[in-house]
Length: 391
Image (tube, helix red, strand yellow):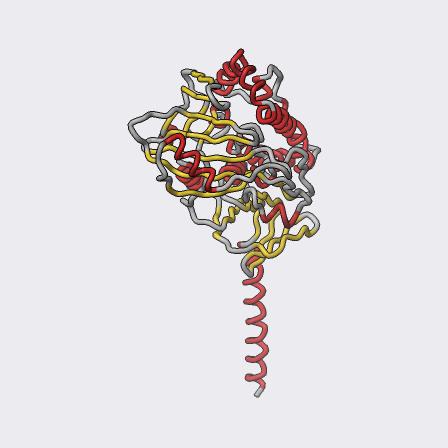
């Protein structure tokens, strides 16, 4: 009888011990220096920098890679400076010739030997960036739903698909419809902008990279190896703005390409309202999740890559700095969002006064911009001022 009691006590204690060990191991396995929600360019740019500094990083995303990503796929020369690797093997076209159309015969053609940007298939670019980041040492978890995000003293706790994860820092890199933004910040897109795009097969007629401006945005033609990425979007909206539709895309393709055949049509939002965004505590938003796409031409990849990079830099530098990561990232944002505001001023002129914009570009501003973009300058630098946020 005594042996049976002893055995029961031993067995109970042993089971309790095993459960405690499992709980501790589970906490260790689900604990990270940084968790990044979103495996696109902003998330991977952030992760890559953190991994270089020896951080334990987990990337969560609803999609497996490669995955479809609606985007024209133009990567500016200034963006290439901030990528941690060469992407020459992904380039399908270099935009050495560009045309800007303002309606009727108002057209401006610009050239530069370097090209203002390179064209990639966005799905392939994202997949390559993601693969390189995983090879660097990031862990990846495909997820379905983030139920809750809680700030617990100096740690962030996430409830995801029935499991709990802990991290020192959380990065919201989950795009214009960001779940992290909705759960953790007051940033809301009051006048959201969006676009429709699709693919048109190449014909005998060769089109150059082209922007066709209208009152609230533009249509675009971006050449690739065997097709054109063609789209139409709005970048300025108000209650009186005409909302674009799939029908507008078909009309544009029919007019310019003399065909009704367009494939892989996708509608997608663009995050452009982050001019005043500031990070709070140890949760940072980057890329479209923070509204960092510029509102002049809708470029998002550059700002995604740079904001991800400098969010990581803030975390790394805070370990050897008297300032917190939050303060360092907000110092970056203070200067970075000045550039976004400059783009917004430019967009109001471009779309609000197209005739004036045409003559400004024709009389020298267009060449200045083409030369600036082709040599990797930011808008601030093109306007002759130092770019403070990169310092």
